[in-house]
Image 1 (cartoon, rainbow, N blue to C red):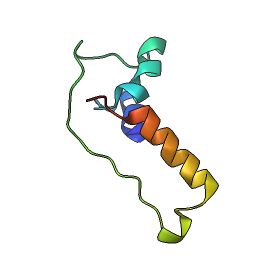
Image 2 (tube, rainbow, N blue to C red; image 1 turned 45 degrees about the vertical axis):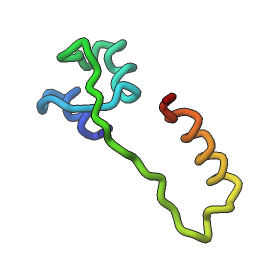
Image 3 (cartoon, rainbow, N blue to C red; image 1 turned 135 degrees about the horizontal axis):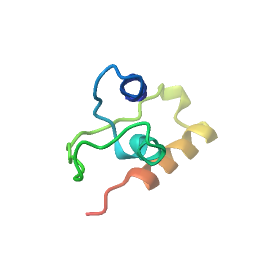
Length: 74
């Protein structure tokens, strides 16, 4: 997604990016939104790792941060 945003910044075309990725670029003016409304994609994302890495403290910290940051309130 970042590569698509960079390509759009260089005039290659348009890109569909997350608001998290786009917001700074919108504020800087390097990209503009085509629509005022955000697209609800219903996409799912998965954090995958090797079984032997699941208990590493840094992996646990990343996992917890992702859950807190991206959880959708029901």
